[in-house]
Length: 287
Image 1: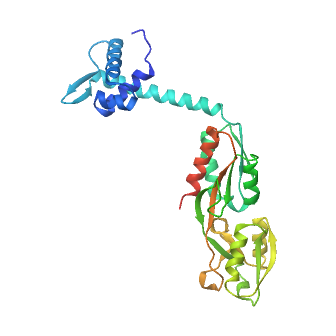
Image 2: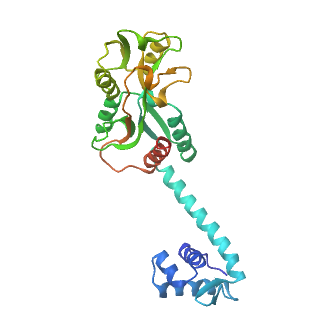
Image 3: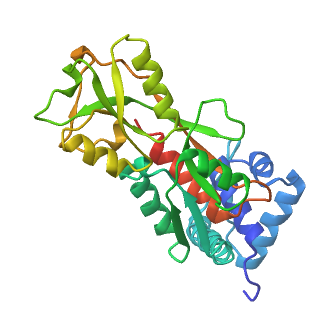
């Protein structure tokens, strides 16, 4: 046997073994029934007697010789697929710019990046932490490849991944939410979460004051820990040592924050960017 096995011949062999008929295999591999029959004859000419298949009723069953070749066929095809994937990976972007607000940098992002790194160990991911509005502009200007952003839920070009609950937080040993005028620590003006919080508080009729405003979640948490204000944060961003106020604590119920995926505008996305998007979807869409 001098000829090397062609991928198409091996793929046809696998298709027949898994479907049990030449006609079903023809549909799977996208060839005519006569072409499939010719491929089987060619395979059998290459390996010699006895034949690879025997007919049982309407089904084509592998002979013992056919089963041996099938095992090699699957291994060869798998190796070819792996080689092709590795070649595509090597030709992918060597660096990806990922934008994410600081309050969404947590376990979900870490899980997505870990899975991505296992598939693309040579691709560098630069994480840009900016507010969602800034990240949306960076995506439009193609200054980031992909981003996780807070969205209104109807923003053009944003794929909604989840709706994250919002909760009010307070220092463990303080009850600032019971004060006559409640001090609030909020994200900077223009933030969707800030607007939601102020709208919800306005509907209560209770007096409040904006005591602190910052684009940094670390700053807001530090203010809360110091017992200087209460703050509304996405549930995924709340540290375990911070008190979460219940709905019966007299604070307004907050709507959920839609979290979305946005891509850099224009051009086709390569395999690495698409794969990172897949990992982000899987991580952020988990309950």
